[in-house]
Image (tube, rainbow, N blue to C red; front, side, top):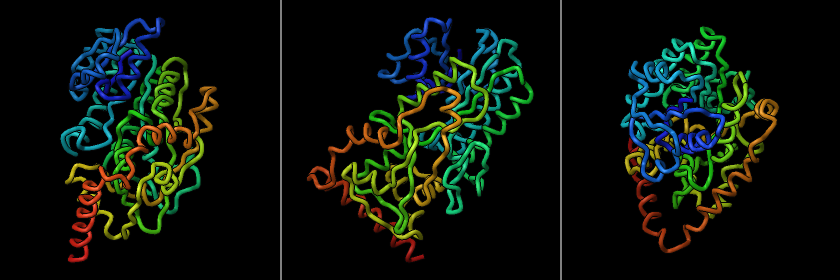
Amino acid sequence: MLVTGVSRHLGSRLVSVLADDARVERVIGVDTVPPRKELAAALGRTEFVRADIRNPLIAKVIAQAEVDTVVHLNVLATPGSAGGRTAMKEINVIGTMQLLAACQKAPSMRKLVVKSTTAVYGSTPRDPALFTEDVGPRSLPKSGYAKDAVEVEGYVRGFGRRRPDVTLSVLRFTNFIGPFIDTPLTRYLTLPVVPTVFGFDPRIQLCHEDDGIEVLRRAVAGDHPGIFNAGGTGVLLLSQALRRLGRLALPIPSPTVNAVARAFRRAKLVDFSPEQMRFLEHGRVADVSRLQASLGWAPRPTAQAFDTFAAAHSGARVVEAAAGAAEQRLLELLASGNSRVLGA
C-alpha cells in the first residue's frame, strides 16, 4: 500500500493502523517533508519516502514497489500548509494528476481511495436540507480548497473510466473534529472571542478524527466502489457549539465579514477562505446513509464527536483573566477591519 500525505495528522495515524495489520505486506508513506518527531513515532514499519507527487518520479515508486493500493490524502485545505495559494493548487491538482497518471500505468494497481470533502457541494441559502452523493452543488466553488477538490474529483472520475478494473472509492468527509486534530474550524472554535455572522446560525456536521481513520481503514480493507459522504449523523448549530465550549460569540455585519477574515489571516489566527466564510453563514449537511450501508458501520453522531473536542478545549473560557489580552487583540482587529470597510 502507498499512502500520500503521511507527514500530517490523519496520514500518520492511518499508516500506523495499516502497518499494524499483519495482512498488509508493505506500507509506503509519501510526503514532501519528513513527519514531525511526534508523528514519526507512529509510523511503525511504514517505509517513508520523501517525494513530491507533482514529480513524475512517483511513477517509479509505485512501479518498483508493485503497489496495488493507493490512499490519496495529500489534498491540502489551507494555503499556509503549502506556502501559498499557488503552491497549494499545484500540490492538490497537479499532484493528483501526476499520481493518477502513475496509477494508470501500474499493472499492479487494484484499489484507489481518495479523501475528498463535502465542501464540493458549496454552501448557499438555496441548498437542500441534506446533500446526497447524487446531488450537485447549487453553485460551484470558485476558489480555494473546495474548488481544488472539485477538480481533483473530476480527474479521479476520468481515471476510473480509463481503469475500470481498479476499485475506486471517493470519501467526501465533513469537517473533522477531535481532541488532537488541527483544522481551520478547530482554530476558529477555540478563539477567545469567536466572530459570527450577524443573523446567521449555520448547521454544522462533524466527523470525529478516530472515525475518519476507521472509515479510511474500512475502505482500504474491503471493496467499496463509489462516492460516499462520510461523517456523523445529526447537526449542531454554531451557537450550540459555542455554548458547549464556553466561548463568547461576537456577531459582525455580513458586509464586513471578508475584511475581518483578512485581518484574522494577517494575524495568523485562523486561515479562512471565502468558501469557508460562506459555510459559517449557511452551513452544510450531507446524507451519510450510503456510507453506513456500504461499510456496515457508522461514525459517532456529530454531537458526540463534538463533545470530545469540547472536553479538551472548554477549559479556556473567555471569562478567565488569562484570555483578556487575546480578547482585546481580537476586538482591535475586528474594529480595524470594520473601519476599513466603512471608510471604503
